[in-house]
Amino acid sequence: MKPAVNAAVTTAARSQSSLAQSSSAQSGPAQYCYGLDIGGTKIEIAVFDNQLSLVDSWRTPTPTDNYQAFIATVASLVQQAEQKFGATNAIGIGMPGIIDSQGRVKSANIPCATGQQLAQDLQQALAQPLHIANDCHLFALSEANGGAGDGKMNVYGAIIGTGAAGGFCINGQLAKSRQNIIGEYGHIAASASVINQYQLPINACGCGLQGCYETYIAGPGLAKLYQHFGADKADTKVFVEQLKAGDTIAKQTFDCYMDLLGAAFASLVLSYDPDVIVVGGGLSKITAIIDALPTAIAKHLFAGVEVPPVQAAKFGDSSGVRGAAILGTQLAKNDVNGERL
Ligand SMILES: [Zn+2]
Image (cartoon, rainbow, N blue to C red; front, top):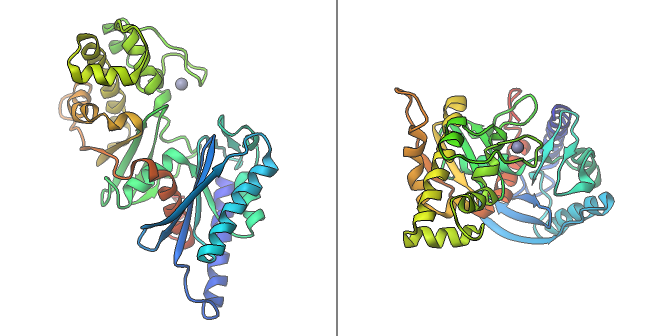
């Protein structure tokens, strides 16, 4: 990630000074910032004003098997926004996957981007600076700025949805790290004592390891747990309905699920000591999960360690584009220091 980050920051700094020089000729600093959320099926662009209020957004299908078409599609979305709202130097992009230390993308959902220097190629296509980050990191950034973690120094944003991943912010900025893998808590090995207590199978994980938390606490994992406890079908929708109806199998599944999630989040508390944990993703909409979390986490912490507040995400599904726009804004303002993004 480092070379890409440095390149982006340097270009941003250069652009900043050229903007300052030409600002009297233009109408002053850019009024809008653009955030893009690149997913495996669609790319969304959202336009925000200076107060981070959403002004407009639209989406288009993602070309996943042709890199040139992929670059052209992203560039075209930005150009459409510029035609409508004017040029901006605040552009951020979020996408699933890891951007390695060489600035190359590894993304299972967008195979054509894997191995490519995406940030560099897009900056070249658009002839302006921009920054790319992991979408779960941007969820944390969004919630740390005006969201459920606003005003807190250390914010851990955890997503429980089709996968389990997150991000960590310090003073409203993404924490910088060596390999950019902060937030991959879904691939920590699940608690042996919980697995033993409920006689759970050791699930194979998509990452190549065995028994990762993600295989139990993400949506498909919860569905499998429900079946493990005796449900006919591995279906989270049915599970939620049955839990509300007071069904015994759903209740047993819920208790085991909370034990696993509590253990996973207890390891986050010990590793990051956050001021708040903000939870997003599809499963965070099950209020029983958010309500039961503090007690479930406490069960896995030794005496004297406090459980931080646990909050449901404020921005939900829009956090990707919003976080991307915030990243773009921070970069444009050069509101980044040598130790962070
Ligand atoms: Zn894994």
